Image (cartoon, rainbow, N blue to C red; front, side, top):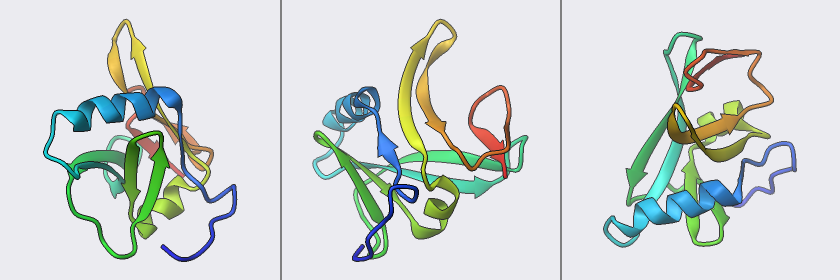
Length: 115
């Protein structure tokens, strides 16, 4: 994407998330990346979706840290602007966690939010 994103528009990855993404895609065919998107639904109105993909769209934003690459489409980027993608390994399970400053509420599962 050719436009310059401001710091508040950017989506960032923590080292833990980048490391886990690299582990996951290492077991996949070459060129596999993680796509993060926002869809309508979930118990709070919107939900995060995580997919492994090998193709990119011309308007995708590519977020890179170390060897990890994450794709975000422009529509989802509007909802994710300023967010941080982390990976947490807790007693109840391990998962990607998005810290989204735009969310006004979220559900207990951590994958659904409202604006």
